Image (cartoon, rainbow, N blue to C red; front, side):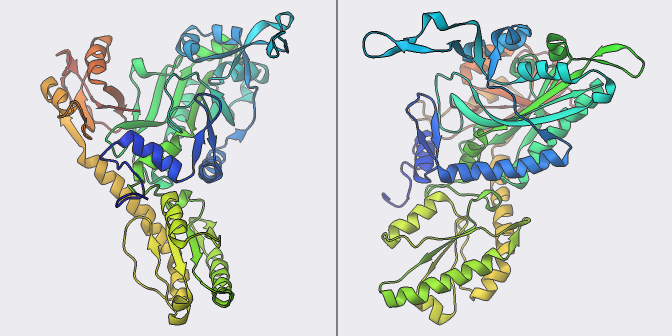
Length: 504
């Protein structure tokens, strides 16, 4: 720990480096021996497991089933959907050989005789390989709908990487569904967007905007793409999840046909939707502070960490059993439908180091318990959200633990919502737009900008100005009202405002 904060630099001093130090300080992940890939460490993976478990239950509650599809995709599959292959071509990792051999210099090389007849793509996304599978599964309208999800890893060859936010390999889920009508597929697309928004706001305590992407930001091959957009503490936007209405584009490319009730052979309608380990990056940047990670209770691997304090074996003989009894009592309580998650840290390391390790890991409540606390019959809970706690009797602490966690969860959401709302503006002129997104100090850019609601027309004409300012149109909000106006970039008539921001 340096200075007054556990993490240096602070958010205001250097936000990108602060983010990296929070990841390191919380022991979430580290860079691997493979460029652009990360090792997700146990604490970071435990957060992902909580995300996975809660989302998986939501998917199954809406009728979806899990399956698994191949990691490798024949190159010809991608070629069948022109827009799709064009969108992903620059990010694809390609397998060309199936065997290695000695190179005569003490090393190895791909064996020339083992070149594949057709190169295989390490999946950047699975629409094509799953579509080919669906073509075998679908014969009749009676086979529909098909509602499938898979938890998997994907590879996209990124030039600039940042742990959790953008890595060459990352973990995600991808939903893929097939329907008999366009209307059913569109309902599915919006339903899954709602699932993502509910999860983000309820479990992550991260307020989001639901909206439709512009043509330039649309998923390659989709008819329409919807997203949830969140604002981080540096006022940049983060796309946190997407849901795509694919129309019949992939059905036609992969020959997904079915016989309708009328006996006609028709192409099916498909969707896909996904979120990834990027959510952990969003979690970090939404809630964490200059002392490290701050976790919303619903996703915390531990709700309460108990730190026994003692100096002698005699003291330990009294303190540790008390802590174990408290852990048992707490674990018998429930919060958000799950047992309270409690850990005791009795490692033989300095108390100050131990305390700050758990502060930086973001555990919602920390209890340091010594003989004096036991003798006085009081506990002093330390809340990671910065709200001060009063001394409390052990029985009362146990009885109220669920209420306290619920209060913390809501408090984190309210804090994030206020930050976003305070940085959200309506802008009706290009000059005002440029001023809003231009830092006052070009040499040391301070945190600036935010979310700007502006009239615009969806056309290539506006791309140059946005690129110059490093701003993107995040989405057209679904709850936005029809509002006649003028595009601030082209002067053309506009029917609705879009959300603009600098972004990750």
